[in-house]
Length: 146
Image 1 (cartoon, helix red, strand yellow):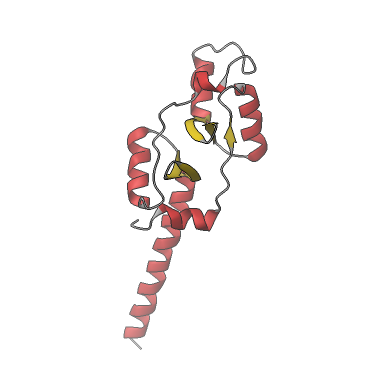
Image 2 (spheres, helix red, strand yellow):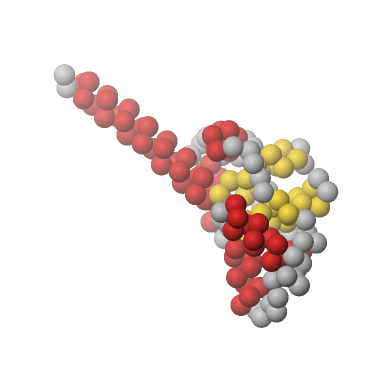
């Protein structure tokens, strides 16, 4: 849990799916479905302008949004998603996700988007790390009694 996010990103890859704030929510939803992702980072030029996730789309529909194709991403996105640095620990990132009720964190280094991590990425990382520790302990215990 002390591993920095840069290790997670290196393991999963640096591809980040983005969209323009003026795009329609319908275009964003189709993009997310095609890529099988739960969010897209909203970029305005080279800067992170927000985050659009499945959650914002569902909330928009629940509030009576009349059309996915006539609603702009900027109208539904979270304009202030938590942004984290590559050296942020996995544990801190997971705590931030819990506190902010988000499943995705854009990773920014000196203002440049360098990756994104999801709760699935982080739980997978923690599970693999714990499995490695279990195997090391089992090896130690077995070796101690031979």
